[in-house]
Structure formats: C-alpha cells, structure tokens
Image 1 (cartoon, one colour):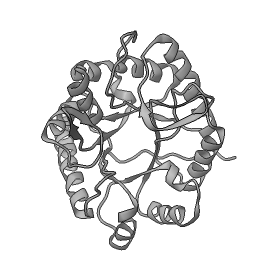
Image 2 (image 1 turned 90 degrees about the vertical axis):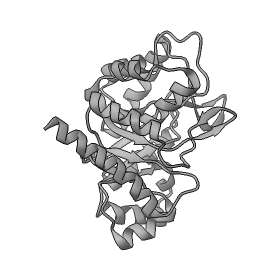
Image 3 (image 1 turned 120 degrees about the horizontal axis):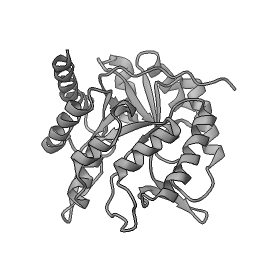
Length: 280
C-alpha cells in the first residue's frame, strides 16, 4: 500500500464542510483556504466520497476523526484504522487529526469524546497507540485537546504537559482547539496561559474555533453558535504567543447558511492577516 501524501495546509481560515453545503460549495466555489471533513462520513465510499473528491479538486482537505478513541483501553479498531488509511490514499489529505480521548470499554462503544487522567501510565499507553496509528497511516497525526466537564484528582500532569510530552515521544502534532480550552477554563478552572506555555509552538499545526452552549451554568462544546467574543479574545492571545496557523470554523449542529459560516471564517482570516503583518 502506498504512503499517503500529505501537503501542508495554507495558514488561512477554512470551514468544516458538512452535507448541507456540499452542493453550494461545488456550484459556487467560494473563496476558501481549505475545508475539513469528518473521516467516518466517507468510509463507506459512494456518493459522499465522490463529492469529497470533487471538493478536493478545488480545496486542500483536512481529515478529522471523531471515532478512533486513542485513549480507550480496548485494542485499536484495525478495521477503522485501515478504512482511514484507504481514505487517505484516495483523498491525499493535507492533514489527518484525531481527538485525545477514549470512547470504548468492555466491548461497548460510546458516542462521545471522554476524558481520562493525565498520568505517566496513560502517557506511555497513548504513546504506543499514536505510534501504531502513525505507522499504519504513514504520516503524522495531529492530536486535539479535549473539552471536559470533569477532572481527575489523580492526574500527575496537566493536559498541556501531557500533550507536550506526547509530541516529544511520538513526533505527532497538535490540533489546538481554542474553544475547547476556553470551555475548560470556565468549567474546570484550567489556566489557559499555562496550557499555552506548556505546549511546544512548533508542534501546533492547526487551530479550531467554534461556539458553545450554556446549560445549567456549564459550557457545552456543541458547535452550534457563532464564535463568542471571549473565544476570539483567547484566539488573538494564542496567535500572539504561538503564531498563525491554519484555522477552522467548526459548526456541526443548527448549521447556518453558507454565508454565515463564511463570515465567521472571514473574522478568523482577518486576525490571521493581522498576525502575519505584525510578524513581518
């Protein structure tokens, strides 16, 4: 099997491409830096994959996974992994990413992205799993920080420290979800600046931005609102301290009209351009 060819994303703003916008994007070919799709939606091939390949003719594509469960205690799902490898071979993505979470135990798969304690034992375990995934895919994997609604008292390090050491041991990259970090600052009291200082800037290859919901005083990572001012403010701080990177607007529920999504991407693009200007 040939090695998937990955190509760096442009340091511009992109959108999460979802089914309601497939036809409009292909008909109008709006000005987009790149698009990101969820891997699992294309494993079955057919019309969705045909559409994605048409999109790939016009835009760089990032493949983003939600179902691998890198920290699950069950063995890696090799059927899932090989489906991803075949998708990479076909699409030739610019980036491949996955959440740092668990989602299965004792033969039960949970449709969620669940947190785990940041311990040395967990780090050693996840290191092996990330190495296995990167070996099978033949390319670097980006690992995404998680939005959480609880923390573990027996964690031995912070999430930022865990990610930093994981990148050192495996050579994986980081997909820095800025909204997830903001959610954690509000729900769990995470120190955003300490997280940013802990992760190596050179390992950060992509940013995510999204809107959350508020339920009983808890921020929930629902991806169903515009990006809030507080998240834009944190994003600007991240740009100053880590630098410009490809930035995605995620919107997965109550998906708006394409011009609304494009408007959010334009806000990110302006901030990226301002950051580039400051560097120059």
